[in-house]
Image (tube, rainbow over all chains, first blue to last red):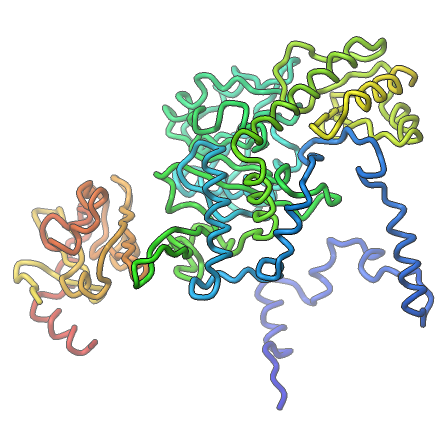
Length: 445
Length: 128
């Protein structure tokens, strides 16, 4: 028996409804050369040959393991104890599908609950969800929460927020009645307070700040939450969660929502993903939080048990009025974050955070004292900072790549006005010797 | 079950009480028993426009979440802070302290289209 979930007639009707004549029309946005790419492998290759070929291609990539890397800008190299992968590779956890049924998945639900507890400790807020795909999507969800909660149409976003995150917000808002407005930053790479205040109008649903911001600088948010709340808007903060172990938390700054990238905990660079986004909010917004949420309860015999909770927010309960269409989490990476944080412990996390601050401050001082390079030496930073070079960045980069050094991320790609400036990151993974090597190589460029 | 004679009712199990042009809205004894323990209510905003038969509030019980429909068209003039803080009041006193919101009616004829208690009870029997 044949079963066609969608017949040719159905397809035709769907195409007509959305106003295109053929399926191919839907692919117009993709360049033709990419649609049916010619794969440069001859036919009938043995498994051994194809393995060799693929390994050879893979080796063209250079990872942070092969190089001395000072790349940051949202993805951070950290020391992850082997115990983390030992735990997450257990059969009960290592699955493509997250089992959420309480009768079968107490371990998974407990690990999610513990992850959530750790996130709320760091952010200083009341509730955390089970996680999102990455920091940028959790920020976009926070923006959507603010428009739903306030019934307003505009979100104000600092231009010192990660450029990729702002792009994701824009994508999420495409085709909606909502729009994003940006406020700038000054010479000191901190947000422009006057511009922020002048743009804080009654139609603003939420305001987004990042600290440490994209330039690595800690923002002074004194008085910001008062201004935002007086206006009836929500304060959304995105922060490197590791920094929160040493610095003021979003909760202490008066944020309503804190989101961000939890990759610094337990997740390797992995060429950009998969990562894991954290999402936390105040109790007042509990029922507007998107996604999954594990809770602690008791079973029919009164014993401690874990389950998904507050599910009335979710789309399988009320599809058209759900808080979000997100209905899963990034369980394995969240577990890695949870295990890493647990292994470090409260003091350990703080020590790692402080080591990051020490390394970055040391490196900034050294680079600042090197002829041909300038830094903002008095700005408070966490683990990265901006360097301005007298020479073009690509010349510099080429020379350093030959020495197997990734010098940093050029800012001109995202901010055309910031020519020959690049973002340099130093985490606890770098020894003083390595930092000195980098400075010496820079000085010889 | 108790369905006070002075109230009007909807097929979706809301009750309505009229004082001048102001209509107070809540859910019936039948509805509160069906959905069981209410744990959360999401009320409309003061001043919000609501339309007869369209969702205006949400109740969440230990069973599920339900939309609450406005019996009449108009503007919301008050919402209950009592049930926001103590949602269980919807179960304890559904016709009294468990009220949801008040609407200033814009079309009086809508009131006459609502069911009286006898009609509602009869309708319930056909439904069950």
